Image (cartoon, rainbow, N blue to C red; front, top):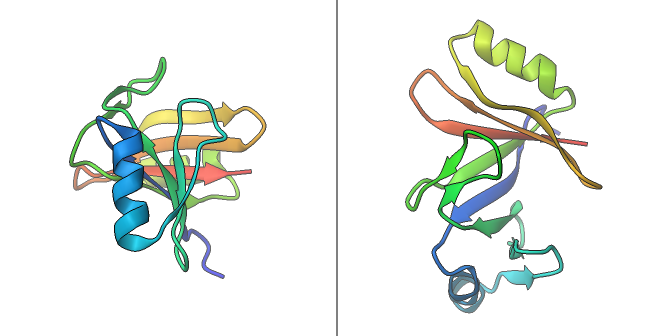
Amino acid sequence: MADHPIVHVEIPARDSEAAGRFYAQVFNWQLDNSAPNYLQFKAEGGPGGGFVSPGKAGDTSLEYKIGEVLIYLNSGDIDATLANVEAHGGTTVVPRTEIEGHGWWAVFIDPSGNKIGLYGR
C-alpha cells in the first residue's frame, strides 16, 4: 500500500442533498447522512468523501470554495508530514486537529498554491 494514498475527498456544494442526489444518480455513489451536517459518500473502487458548504471550516482559517475540491492523503504522523511539507516549501493552513471519535486532520498549501488535506487515525 502507498505511504500516502488519497483517502477522502471533500466537494463544496451550496446544497449538499442535491449534490448527493446528483452523484448517486449519475455515478451510483452510496450516500450516508449519519454524521451531523455532513453528507458523506462512498464511491466504489475509490475513496469516499463528503459534501461541504462553502465558507469557513469551523474556527480554522480554511475556507471551502465552490470549484475547489479538497483531497485528503493518509498520514501515519501528521505532524511529521507537515514538517516535511514545510521543509519543502509548503505552508500549513490547518495544523493537526482532532475529529472527535474519528481521527485527525490537517491542511497545507503546496508550493503551487493547491490546498491538500491530511487524515490519520
